[in-house]
Amino acid sequence: MIDDLGLEVAAPPRVRRVVSLVPSLTEAVAVTAPGLLAAATDWCTHPPDLEVVRVRGTKSPDVPKIIELRPDLVLVNFEENREQDLAALRDAGVPVYVTVIRTLPEAFGSLTRMLAACGLDRPRWLDEAREAWADVLATPPSARARAIVPIWRRPWMVLGHGTFAGDVLARLGVANLYGDAAERYPKVPLDELRAAGADLVVLPDEPYAFHAGDGPESFPGLPAALVSGRDLTWYGPSLREARDRLDAALRAPLR
Picture 1 (tube, helix red, strand yellow):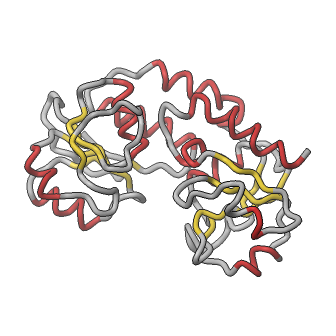
Picture 2 (cartoon, rainbow, N blue to C red; picture 1 turned 180 degrees about the horizontal axis):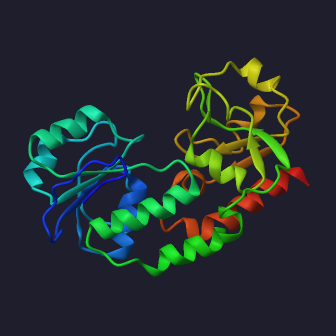
């Protein structure tokens, strides 16, 4: 078994117990094979009725507890999880499978490989999700708007280069003004954001919970699109409906 980093993963021939440390991956496995998951993070909120052992957060997992569970495979992501935690799991003999997802095409390929690593056939939801985005997978459309995309305030942080969310926006015709930034999530003073020349500010409700009363007021005169953070940043079953919801939310303030 080889993960997205090209590393060999010494999982058993039959995977029976999986721990997921990424909300998107948790949902992908839980929807595909209920009962395969042994544990997930506190942030794994989907499916809503998911009942598994909780092992704290993506960047603060309870490593001893995970080791005690003796999983056949732990699912992680190169961006969301810390290398020191993965190293600790590997040192304890726990197989760790790392996903690398920065674009929609990468998401579909990575999810296919990850589910196969869990011993699962390609699920219908994955084909439905790909079909929902099929016309923009090969080539994103021309940008109809330039946007800044804050993900935090105090201090203000925005989407930078090489992010899954930035690629999703590009495939919906929205160019990230900070897409060429040196950092993936640069800190940018509010005055600079206001003067950046954006046509739109996109405000997701996670990781910072932007909403109508918290966020738009910081960008007077600039149209604001309030979007679901799950639609914008999660890769998994949510991709089936995310396109229509995001497209509607992004188009509304530009009319």
